[in-house]
Amino acid sequence: MPELPEVETIKRALEKQVVGKIIKSAESNFPKLVAQPDFRKFQARIKNKKIESLSRRGKFLIFYLSGSKVLISHLRMTGHWLVGSDLKKEKFIHLNLKLNDSKILAYSDIRKFGRIWLVDKNELADFIPWSKLGPEPLSKEFTWKVFVDRLGRHKATIKQMLLNQEVVAGLGNIYVDEVLFKAGINPHRFAKRLTVGEKLKIFRAIKTILALAIKHSGTTVVNFTTPEGGSGHFQKHLKVYGKKGNRCPRCKGKIKRIVVAGRGTHYCPKCQK
DNA sequence: ACTAGCCCCTGGGAGC
DNA sequence: TGCTCCCAGGGGCTAG
Image (cartoon, rainbow, N blue to C red):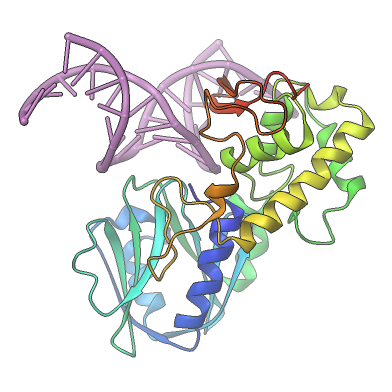
């Protein structure tokens, strides 16, 4: 499931391949993929637009196009982007953007949870799924003060709070489990009740884990590949996610899988207090 | 204003 | 081996 490091990996690989290219046409076998505008308008508006640059915000991938248009993509569970001249073997492509160099920029998504929006640049600030997003965890806007302030807003477990994109943008189930393991905090703890020292450990773990995951091109658990078809390597560094029954690498306790906030949650009951 | 829970999807693992 | 059942999960939406 693509979280911040995976989207960042896709962005970096993709920008080398498509920046400067012109989109000649758009075809889809699943027009619902484009949430806004309706697909006919999308086709008309994207035609002959040049891809000027790529960006990322939380788990959103952003293509800045000529004519002040912006294509926003959220990969949700199984979405990814591919570039190639022959993608016929790919079974789950739902959008083909033909480029002027005869290559195709394609969006593939097994579970079809992902969505795409095409908006005007000046609509970006009001773009709903995005306007409420919390700070970028690796930016200087994500300060200790901001983090503490946001953690105090709701009565919720720390797991829920870190999954909430309004608290901090880009964390998903895998990295929240890894962050809480690194910080030594039990996912059931109420965020408001954590000590200053504990919050600080979490704050630091968010930055360290995400930076390390980006360095390793993200995590390939299910269905994540880079646009070149490569895999991430961070799964080799996962300590608790998907490790139910394994020994804890820190204290040799047994890793448990429970459900918190409706999500599979992996932790070590012995050393995560 | 808040939260809990449903819904979208489909491959693949579990169970028989 | 082959079938059926049901889980995984981000985030929008609805009902309470």
